[in-house]
Amino acid sequence: SMPGITCLDINPRDAKQTATGGVDTNVVLFNREAGKIVGTLSSHSKKITAVLFHPSQDTIFSASSDKTCKIWTPIEGGYKVAATLK
Image 1 (cartoon, one colour):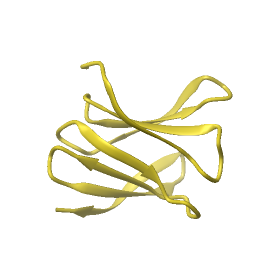
Image 2 (cartoon, helix red, strand yellow):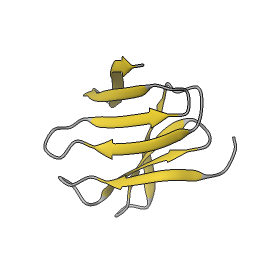
Image 3 (tube, one colour):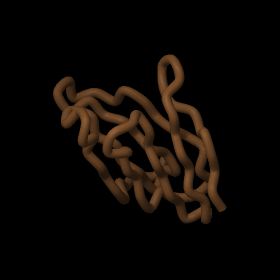
Image 4 (cartoon, helix red, strand yellow):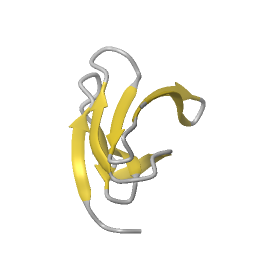
């Protein structure tokens, strides 16, 4: 995979959770307190240009150079794409 973080957000509801978007097309979720990756969200086909936690709900938004935005909602053990906006 190609190196490079292109964007970052800190969860306003839980400051130890961080999301990054990268050149490798993935959104990666980190637990800053533990220093560990806790999830990888894969669905985009080009680099991630923006990632954002919803301010009050357990939802993550991502935008990509593939000209889509995705809305990620929780499932057991991770997140799934709830909607893709083109």
